[in-house]
Length: 157
Image (cartoon, rainbow, N blue to C red; front, side):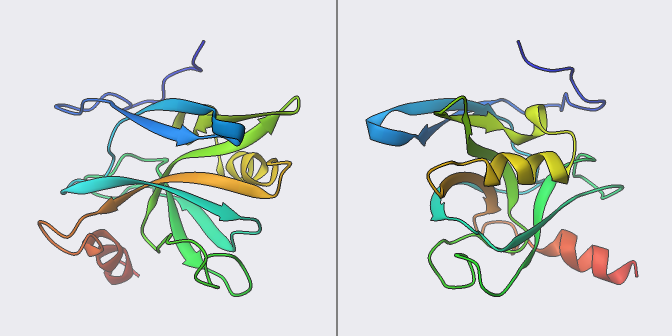
């Protein structure tokens, strides 16, 4: 059974989409995801080796974006993303990750299964085989660059 719904988890005109996540040996999982960014966006399913080298944070008090939304705050040196092995970008919203549970690889919806960044980090490093599949939401280039909210955050400091 899914965990408790977060405050503000329902959004007007936001329909869940089914996103397929490849697991090990030809198996797959399907996540039911709802977009969290306010403009034209796409879901991207990205496989990468660990460590990713990402600093992930949660949005709070950001216009048009639900509080608690996990996003990539920084790409750090030395990880798979910095080495160009995986196309994960600053500003991407992290919707899903694979993790290993009792020896089986599965996929979780981050905004349902994880209360905070520590829980999300534990899920990512819990991939016993050293690789993770990450589902991100990214602005697709229509209706702006997709980074406007980050520019707004920068202006607020």
